[in-house]
Image 1 (cartoon, rainbow, N blue to C red):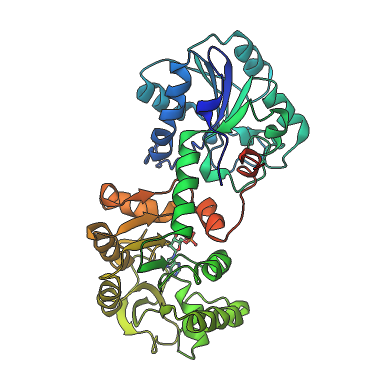
Image 2 (cartoon, helix red, strand yellow):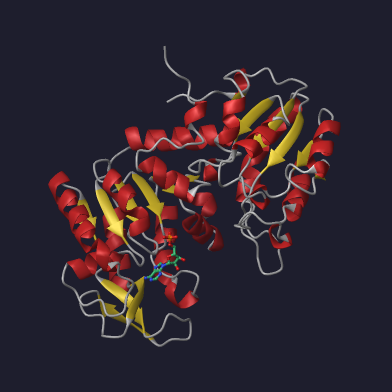
Length: 399
Ligand code: AMP
């Protein structure tokens, strides 16, 4: 799959609209706590500036649900871009309102304008035509560099593409990189290939799991999703997170793995607690004997040892989803130990998913990971074999 390339567009001195993904985490003081997504967009922005373009940047932040909410303003993002680009970033007070439109009109070559949070407009998530058209009217060219949101058919991601022909739209460098990387990972991984899949629920990752099975050699399950499998195996899982309506699906995944000769690993022990809380009493129990009323909130030490053993010979590791409730120190050890092991490995290591990226960054091993994807949901959908709605209009049609 080849995407329309920004380098083939004649953008010199033109107005370019770049859909970015600046949906960055903020701490309680509204400081950006991880600016990876902003830094990842800089090459495309700089490329356009080097071509003397007038650059219009657009992104969403959080879920303001179609209403203006200061908490989700992109002003802190504008400051960070300004710092990274070392040049002024003009901030629009709205998305397609009077202020944005007049600033777009006045924008000169080599200037950068950032629109306010796209999701202040209800039409953004509804893929509204009027909004798409207004956004499209701002520029001569459209660039999608927002991998993290390309699995959403939103106005600035999908709708807008209909207003540009193939000579006036393309994928930015980040989007190209992510799509190429996952394409290679799916089609020709260096084996053995292991997928570590964790996080809260089976439901969010079921399709991805099914789709991964024919491609990987081993699957290692952790996090809350493990308990649906463990329950289906007849284990006592106490009050652990279980999706009862997915027990049969869990069985199907295990049957498929067996049929395909994929080694399927589940935790053999867990850190169990009486309450979902940092100050709860906790203890290590075997995965078969979680006491009544207790819930498994992390993988236990025997599982960590087992998983290290299992990962020792692999050449490619894909990791999506933490092994436990890593946000609470007490239940973060399993994830931390696996993160250190993955980071130290000589294999190609790929981390996808906001939580897992956050995790490796928190413990400072992010530089040791071969590839950290900026998109959790988007990378999962790619692994499910889907063509993302924001990417489809940018695929070069053969023949
Ligand atoms: P996801 O968004 O599905 O990748 O899930 C990430 C979330 O799963 C994190 O916020 C974790 O706290 C949570 N999580 C991981 N393990 C467990 C568990 N054993 N029980 C409940 N939640 C968990």
